[in-house]
Image (cartoon, rainbow, N blue to C red):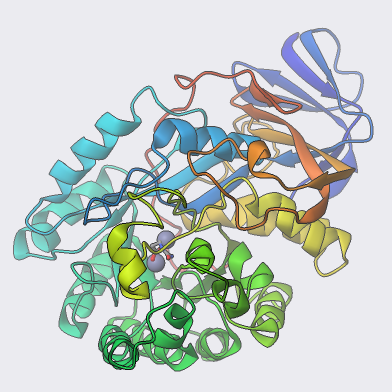
Length: 470
Ligand code: URP
Ligand code: ZN
Ligand code: ZN
């Protein structure tokens, strides 16, 4: 048997094991693991490299409408390109249903934006903002059967927030259909109350974004989302958890046997609300929700990873250009933090940050790194074992890492559509030096060698019913 490619001489790491072996690849799949595999068209030398499953980022936003003339900095081409530079081989962006739109209309639009524009593989989560009888009774069940097996609901944001009744109705459909439900947990009324009060006092600079969404706002909504999901008996994923109190709500739910999962993100490990407090509008670069908190909250999020309260580590990549009237410096945003577009870029920096701050600094082990960055995403969102591991029969989605390479993060390394990275100047150890999607190298030592036609859309299975949460 001959191979299209053999990755030779590296150390293969999965969520479970670490072992020295070669990886044989044919027709985009891993077809052999072993030594002396024989001939291949291409030999990739992996001496001194780690051979990891390509990253799966299950929380990214591309080309999402943001209102008021604001334009997201990444469409599918630049977003997936940046993902590939960061060692990712699959991303799961959101398909946002706008009010009055059907889910099918929304999906048609996102597919038209994504088709032929993706450097890595892509699947869509649905965002349900208008849970009409038609949407919940007919569209959603049919779409879950068609492979759109996860959806996100919001407890905040104008035009997106669902009432408790709507949350319950949507949760019931997730339970009946077996879809995975992601929840953005912040209390909308509390945020509006605090924002109005801050504005009346003239406190409108970006740093007041953090004061408008303090920890109790997130803790209360997390508790409420868990309670509602308990009423319906449906598994949920609380996304972008930023602090100990919200994390403890999830932990308590898990201890009570509820299937409640959690996600955290690089911004909650690396940034604090002090980053929002800068001269002029610089703080706008760090406006995201929930906001970055403090050093104790960072420590809590690390504990959430170490103690496996969190199952996944995602970027929540939601990029806006900084120096741009359609981005962070939109005229309305200068009048109040309320209007600064929410979200920061991070799809390319997610994995180097977790590797360097987590593995190299001894906070998590390499197998946990793989679980948080790829395997658990695949398991929870219905892509495993095609994606998220290195095994015979899986797609040859692989990232080669140089675990010793020291890199200073600069925006020019990111290759996205934004004009900044929140992590400019951060020194990391460990870097993805080659990214392969279904057997094809797409990024090789800092050079894009793939094309935006290579990435494919992935219909997904339902998450395994009643399975133990990874
Ligand atoms: O600020 C954020 N997180 N923007 C992205 C939208 C979301 O809530 O995930
Ligand atoms: Zn969110
Ligand atoms: Zn998000």
